[in-house]
Length: 318
Image 1 (cartoon, one colour):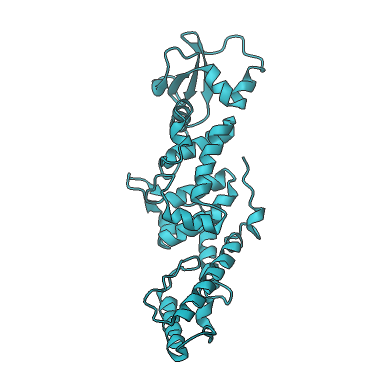
Image 2 (tube, rainbow, N blue to C red):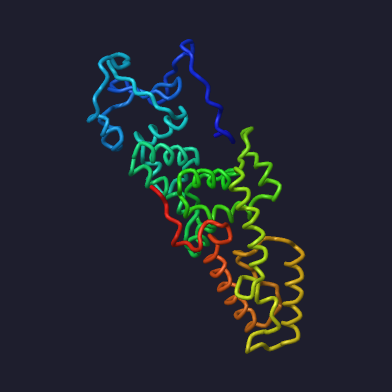
């Protein structure tokens, strides 16, 4: 998957037609994407796609293009997307088996063409993987970070997810995808891109670059807010049951200084308090405040990225 779509060019008659990897000799229809053809079964694609099923009800041209008696249907899509979709259609187990991680290129192709051609079951399965990895719920977000991934990771994947989600109106995916991108990549990468490791770069469009820049600024300010993740560090208080007020207060001040100087985004961080040397009562009290603060940051995450006032307003358009 390249970082930018290739420029479209007019196909000439001299360009050779190639056979794609999805080719059944007993197929009844040929789908052509660019200069690549795929021979498949009309019954299979029309069963799973209401778009192709409805083509049966349309008047047909008197002399349609054909090959070996099979009508040729030209698709205005990339050969890679068409092949990925058809491979998944004929071998859906990998997509539907949540114990197996799937390459992002498969997910992206199924989302794009699944929406366009109304392959509803495949589309739902692909979107389920995206919303599992980039959820609306904080508890699930935490669990995902500790569990097996359902999409094979690679450098720059969060940028590619952002682009796919925005272009296909999967709005609920965006807040956690933006946050994971900010957490994973440098600020320079927002503009330079992230090398995927296959001689291509994962990049963001200006609209997403802006949301990341604005969102990071707001999150850096918010993480020390009084009701947010690290806000307790700026108050003078300790727990009611503190056994050493002087020590715990001094430790809070040192931690605040360290976190402030680091410039690290920690608005949703699960802060490890081992080694802080507070008394047990303060550790328990601070842990509760951190968790309450994380929930408050999460509640406002769509607002920080200027997507919506809250999660309930982010509707996925399938």
